[in-house]
Length: 321
Image (cartoon, rainbow, N blue to C red):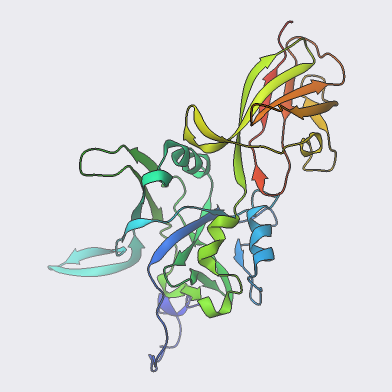
């Protein structure tokens, strides 16, 4: 189903019919962001006939192809979604529509514990991408755009996503203020949703399925074959972040799990065997020992590949012992 042609006045008029007792889409409570078009050239979203169970959602949140991965953000508040401005030209005092609907901005807030500078970093990491957006409503529906029976993302105007941190003051809680603009080529006649009754694993529970983002912090180097570092959850204060425990040697992979127990020497363009041991006393602290000393100045690329976790690639420069 698509009303693109009819809404351009090029098709047969539609009959309004009778609405009957049909549920309405509820107000949005979570947003899901992702690349609008994936690496296969397909719209990102939910193909017709998909069984939206826990396994399918978990796979989307852990996709190794970043153009297909979904990012679900914490609960949103104070959503404001303005009506698109209908561009007009005034002739003899009469505003004639030009056929363009432009500037459809929306904004919302995250509040308290979830509205941290760390969350701003997440938004900033996505704002330069060509984004699509689905929303989870307060009624547990999944809302987006109907594209011939597939539910795809609402296309955002590239470069308009903005997140700003607002610290707490007397009488107000800490907030993250987020805004964006819907792409001016989107046609609101194609807005649609998947009802909660058709979603096997409740959409409001999806946020909790996301992988934990790991923050890597180098502590020291001993010789040219040993790197000591800490792994923490991204949320929390400088000295009070939740440590990430239980990471082992085989979780380090330069190629998304194809090769385990390796890091990558960017300078030599070669994998390096490593052994990783967690500190028995200090949670989240690890010692990585390389199979052989590396040359001073070499850049070592470190990646963790483990289901339920995510970490940006980190580059460590080997220093003189």
